[in-house]
Length: 91
Image (tube, rainbow, N blue to C red):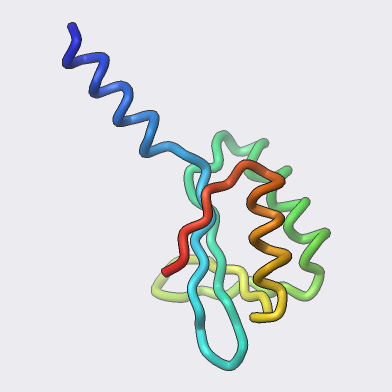
């Protein structure tokens, strides 16, 4: 039984709401959200993101959708992640 509990703990750790950011050059940063939760939570988060980052544009990079923001907005994005309980990973 204990090993089953440990498996559940490792699954929970993998499901931490996360934002991934990577520098794209030309003063752009691509951001992507992972393990946010159910569809409605994701939609609410995306609405907040789009409200705060009005000029962000969505593009497909390596067959995945990423939001592009300017490099000067990165500090604001880190605050956004903190305010919404997202772990931020930079790649």
